[in-house]
Length: 119
Ligand code: AMP
Image 1 (cartoon, helix red, strand yellow):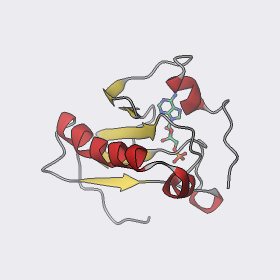
Image 2 (tube, helix red, strand yellow; image 1 turned 120 degrees about the horizontal axis):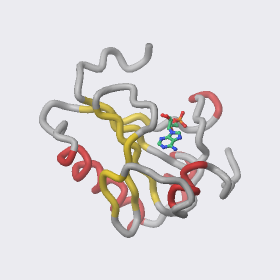
Image 3 (tube, helix red, strand yellow; image 1 turned 180 degrees about the horizontal axis):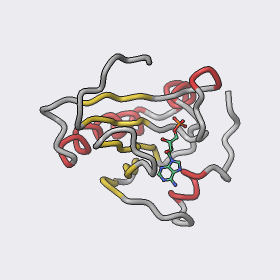
Image 4 (tube, protein in one colour; image 1 turned 180 degrees about the vertical axis):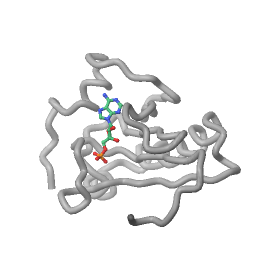
């Protein structure tokens, strides 16, 4: 398990030190365009709280943080117009998943046929 490190890039995005292309935001979450999209739609959804991974969030986030995080998904898929066509959510969590940025993020990808879950 990572220890939360404020130097991670998503923390800097939340602090406004690094720009982002915002899709949706509220008190608890921020969603923005992935800088290196893997599909026509590739959004990243992050909580504003300091959670390193899905594992950390699942164990330690408040009910309200979890509720707002999950509720944000359909806001984003509607804004990006993939609610009907379909999408996939990926949350890399920890070393085996090759998680790069140690601040929880959901990848929300769609806009094309996505193929099998694991390559
Ligand atoms: P993961 O490997 O699951 O940790 O994914 C990290 C994701 O963050 C990758 O898809 C990157 O393209 C994306 N990423 C890294 N830096 C930025 C940034 N400054 N703005 C938007 N997306 C980023």
